[in-house]
Image 1: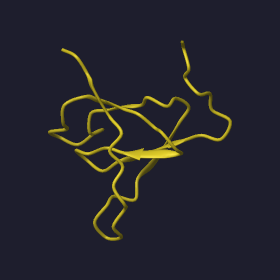
Image 2 (image 1 turned 90 degrees about the vertical axis):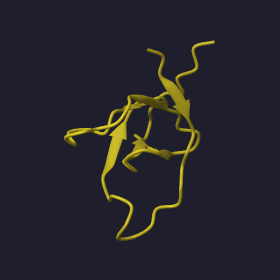
Image 3 (image 1 turned 45 degrees about the vertical axis):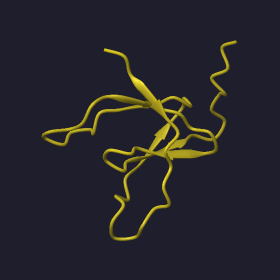
Length: 73
């Protein structure tokens, strides 16, 4: 199965968007919904600025200060 990459990053809505913010050291974090019983398909997200929000579960992944650029070209 091939993972999908998305740069989806909606504006957080207080009281609606989960406040969960996960610090990561890579610009391409993977999300499968975490420990939620049903979860969702595993997706590869792409952090363009400093964070990205999963389009399925709204978990927000924040790039840790000093993290690399993941440029492997």
